[in-house]
Length: 89
Image (cartoon, rainbow, N blue to C red; front, top):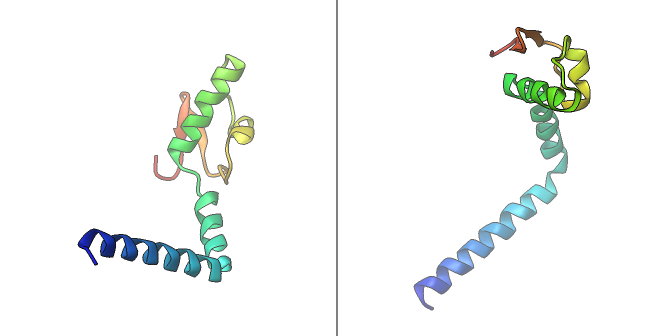
């Protein structure tokens, strides 16, 4: 076997192994995905503010107005002078 063939076989084998491991542990993957998806950041809220302004032509006055633009929990954030304020900002 040549070196390139060996590398290709190794890459395919590792890919199949990784996919098999993921398929055998779906509960753990789902739990991790939900935790990450529920964490909103300042950047997420700022992006939602920009989206709100683009659609409505006016600045949002509360975080409640941004809920349709964001997936995840943004209840810990508020809007101060047109930008997000809260944890990590």
